[in-house]
Image (cartoon, rainbow, N blue to C red; front, side, top):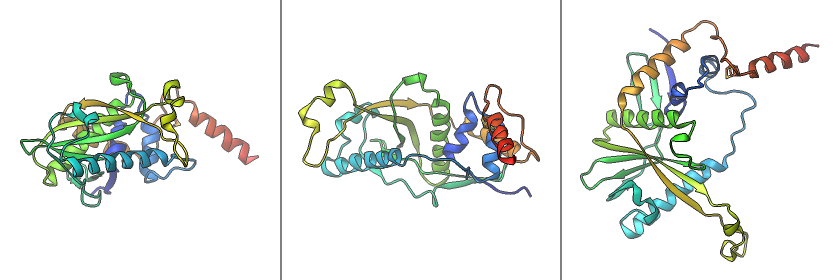
Amino acid sequence: MSQQIRISAKNLGEVALPDFCPRCFWVKLQLNNRLPFQIFPGIFSSIDSYTKRVVHRWFDKYGSPPPWLRDLGNLTGYMEPPHFSKYNILDHETNILLTGSPDAIFIRPDNSHLIVDYKTAKYTGAQDKLFPMYEAQLNAYALIGKQCGLEPISDLALVYMEPVTDEAAASSDEVHNADGFGMGFTANVHKVSLNLNIIPPLLAKTRAIYDLESPPARREGCNNCQLLEGLLEVARH
Ligand code: SF4
């Protein structure tokens, strides 16, 4: 029996990126994604969870989504996304435990579910280089949901919350308050196709890379491995 791999929906999504590097992925899998020199600013996850609370509190007060989410279509309610410890599935084919919980789950008038992920980022539409990763991430959430009783799932969507930082906003008196200033965000909804078939090949590729006994070749055009080797060389002297 192969060693079980645990991977989040987001990390699995990396495999779908056009500039995916199997060598980097192999290293991350072997180290359980605990790489040195990784500093991810916590502000983005704070904004994502604040967005979630803002939306839910509006729903609680008015029984409908805030007007700026109108592009999500008709919604009658929401449910708190389950904690990732309860939202995971074991893929028996590859012995991979797929985990991760979406930012938001909304309910349609026909009782089907819409899974949403918030992204604090500038909206570039189909130009977003990371879109294949987000598409896989949302479909992985849907696959998990399907097997964890979240049925039926009708739609997936990304909601990009784009900071409003233009001159007009900066010069407006409205942004100031007694303790500091506020910054607005503009919502852009980007629908994502529900296609669970994209997940099994990503799981199979993850298993194949994990099982390699030595790291695969590095990605063409990325010099960071070389820089690291140079750094290690310097450290040896
Ligand atoms: S080639 Fe670049 S992306 Fe690949 S392992 Fe090296 S540093 Fe990471």
